[in-house]
Image (cartoon, rainbow, N blue to C red):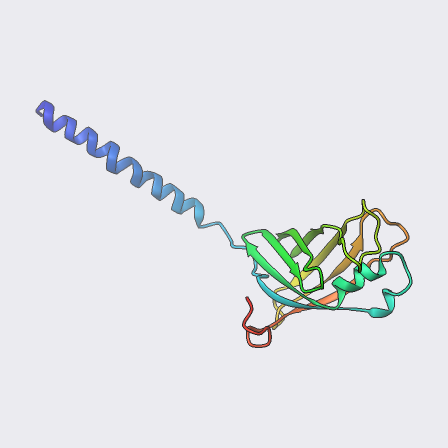
Length: 165
């Protein structure tokens, strides 16, 4: 075999063969990956209004409890935007069917929580229900006298959400 032919074979193996082996390995590994369930969209949150009256942070919890929330999803990461007067935003994660979000304290006339208190939302997704639903709790972190508020949320269809996504 001539020197030129040997260089061609070596170059071919390095520039074509190795990338193909790498691609085959990536595809084989990717077969076991499973995408997280979809929670992207607009959700209508409903909470028991009788649990909201009287306690500390009741105005803040009420402003987030009976409203809608838009959830944007990228893999397991979530951004929640509440449709309340201050358009409260939160970031969260989705671990299998469990949704957890940390909500920055609301700083407006509706807020009655202390400066160092944040809100936490935890929920479980029911992927088999149609439309998809969430059941969870909205609570104030660091406030033992604040009663957690249980809620139920239903994902709105595109037509009932006004075309919002």
